[in-house]
Amino acid sequence: MTQPSDSTATPDMAVTMNASRRRLFRSVAGGTGVLLSVQAKTALGGGTCLSPSRILSGNTSPRTGNGTTCSGGLSPGYWVQPQHFGAWTAAGATPPTFSPAIQECATGQNGLVLSAIANSGTTFQSVFGNDLVPNSGVTVLRPVSLWAIISEPNSFQGPGQLARHLACAWLNAKYFQGASALYPLTPAQVKDMWVQITTTQAYCPANTTCKTPWTAAQVQSYIEGMYDTNAPVPNYCKAP
Image 1: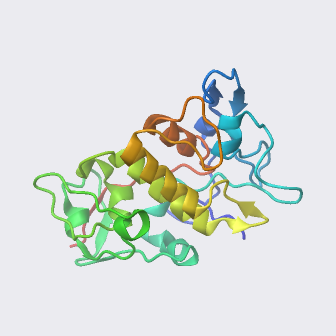
Image 2 (image 1 turned 120 degrees about the vertical axis):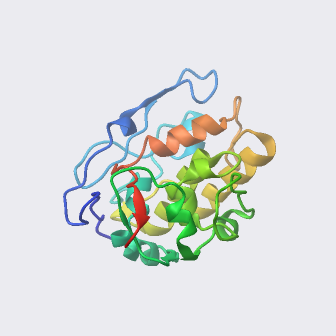
């Protein structure tokens, strides 16, 4: 699969590399002294993607095998843009529809985006098993759209930022499944991250012995640190 480009204006502009994906995870395995560079290998070259189980077990071998290129995935700023909704379809997900239509605006959203969602498309609940509760004064369809969580994570109670990046991770896991671009997590593993963090406040991959499981902040940092593309989430307003 050819990796899509990322831009706040047009999908045809060149991808921008997120420097944070080169973030070093020191001792993230918990007392093992492991120093790992969690970075994605893309068509632009460099690095490998490590699955959480390999990091936490101290195994520095990448998830991908010979002849397979790893993708660190697309950022929230990519997935929210309507011109990229074709990528949702390719990932087996359904983007929302809006009434009235939305457009980019110069300043804050003021709840206009969420209240303009006419059909939620794929919901957070359908993927992760439970719905997020909107903050007081926030108008949004229930169950909440996966897109709404990615667009405005702070409009919801609970770990909204973690939910945002796990939502992107799930889309990335569904989208990047080919040998030319393979995401280091499966959709099932992304779901398991949410379940473990929200029930036990810690994450340890299946069939892995974790001396110190990851916190929610470490899970979020792992996903953010791999993004191959990085675009800010635009401000949206109702179209006139």
